[in-house]
Image 1 (cartoon, helix red, strand yellow):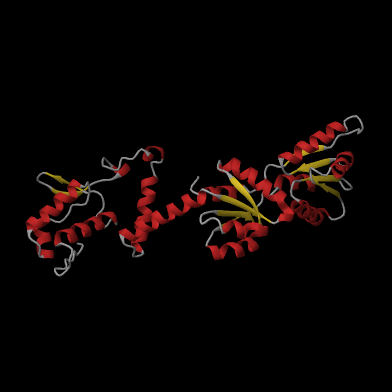
Image 2 (tube, rainbow, N blue to C red; image 1 turned 30 degrees about the vertical axis):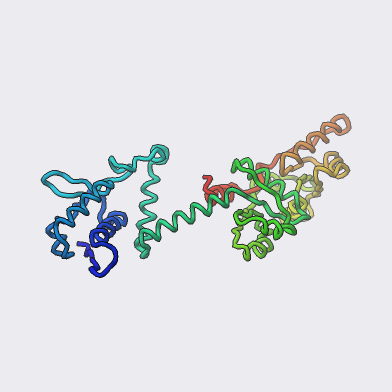
Length: 328
């Protein structure tokens, strides 16, 4: 049996003390749904309060929906949310029937760690408010020498998150943060150290993104015959440099690798004329390669096979970002 302690010298009326303690016992699941509360006589003996005072507290608990009185049986904790009929029949529970249980479990864990009900409420509200404010502005941060990588991330994030995403170069990030107190910074893990160094003093969170594993594309490369020529077209010069290193590590000097950005017409022409297969990391690159190949349709015997890579950001990172921003 829970021991309720009434402080007679407190400025808080004894009835309010008891009401708050019983309400906490219900909220913390020490008194779970369906639990029978002690009789007014038993509680009077424990607390030293008059039975009329305890009856008043029980009536207040019933009026506010925490308990219900069953004639001839006693006072019981009411079931809440999806567990039965109550004032917590929220519309959202129809869409997410397990949501209430998730909240209950989270509260139970906080109580087990020693949090009070008011502290738990503050934690929840603070986190929700933080995510709402941060999700209002998402900034993709990349160094100025690789704006292409930022453009790839912005395009994919705006499609996945369905919110506006702003591109900021690392060199201008500090000035941007001086103008805002609520933003989430997103960048590739390759650029994370520099971005975090700028964001940390401003208490702005940074979420690193992993790039797509390109497993399907790499399997194609593994099976190409020796002396094959492959092309890589991408908005990002950083991707082009990294790809050359990866492919050399994968096949050594067995393959000839040519790279180009879509705006570099000279290199793109050479790729289309020379390569058997061309990988394009983004839609702009793919469209440019298609157009160039069409221009040379009468001049080359066998047009290259064009492969549009699925995406730049790994799906796990997209899912993580959606959860972090409260958009999942």
